[in-house]
Image (cartoon, rainbow, N blue to C red; front, top):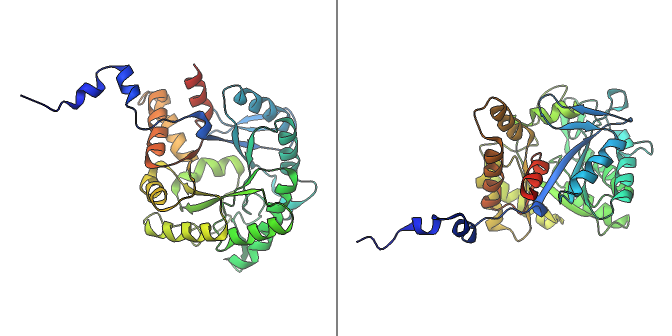
Length: 324
C-alpha cells in the first residue's frame, strides 16, 4: 500500500493554485523603457522585438496604457545622440538634458508611479564606459563626482529611485551622502550590487548605442564565475546606505539571487536583461517555444529564487496576460 502520493496535491487546477508556493504579482515588476529626444518617435529595437525607443509624447501614452494593466514601476534609459557625448558625461547633468525633462514630465503627469533612473556614464560618455576613462583605464574615484552630479540632477527632476549601474567602488556611500546634503533624503538608491560582465547585454547596448569604444567592462563588472564576491558587494552596499540590492542578469544568476536573499534583510531586485528576453522571443518566433508559457516560467524562476522585484521587458505582456 502506498501511503504517500504527492500527486494528490496536483490533481486539479484549483488545488494546484491553492498550494502554489511562488506567486508573482504585477506589483513586483518593473518595466524598462527607452527614451529619445524628439517627437512622434516609436523606433523598434531590432534585437529586442516589441521594444522601442520612444519620444516623450509617445512614451507618456505607453505608460498610460501600462498603468491600465496595473504596472506602476518603470526604469527609464536615455538614448543620447553621439554629438552630445564627451569624456566627462557632462550632458548627463546639463539643464538641456532631454532625459531630465522627461523625468519631470512623466512624474508630473503620473505622480502615482515609481520611476527609477540609470546612473552610469556610458549613455553620455564618448568612451562608452560606465566610469571616467584616462589613459585607457577606468578611474574609479574620478568617476564618483560625475556620478553624483548626475544623480542629484535626476533627483531634482523628480526621480523616485536612483539606480547606480556603474559598479564603481564606494559610489553608493558617495551618492547617499551627496543626495542627503542636497536635501534628497527620501530619494531611494536601488543599487546594481552584483552586476556581472555578461554576454547578455548586447541588445540593450544596441538600444542605447552605448557599447565601449575600446576595451571591455571586466575591470568593474563582476566575473561570471564568482558567487561569494556578491556577498561582499552586498555587505558594502548595505553599509553604504543602499535601500534595495540588485542582481544582474537574473535567470543565469538565480543562485546569486538566492544567496543574497538568504543573507540580507534588504529587498532583492533582479534584472531580467535584454539578452535573456531576446533569446526567448527569438525561440518563440521560430516556433521552438510557447511564448506565454516560457515567459511566465522564466519570471516565476526569478521570483522563486528570491527576487522581490523583477526588472523585465516582459512586464507589459505578463500584466496583459494576468489581467486577461
